[in-house]
Image (cartoon, rainbow, N blue to C red; front, side, top):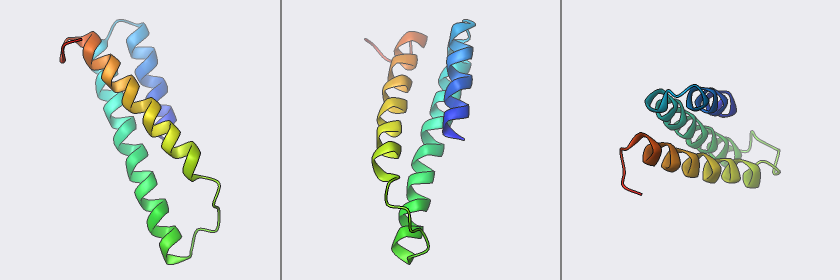
Length: 80
């Protein structure tokens, strides 16, 4: 779901809708952090047996955080 929202953010940005792109980017970042939290909880309970998800999800969080920062600067919400 985080990648879908991130893709919507990119398309909104390409269409010139900076504020809406920023909203989609923030939603994607929040969704990604929520997924990480749920997977860590499931892993702690022993119900998640896949160990190969940590690095890709953390990388995705870093990319989404960087994209949100750039979108906020582009929309004029933070100084560059």
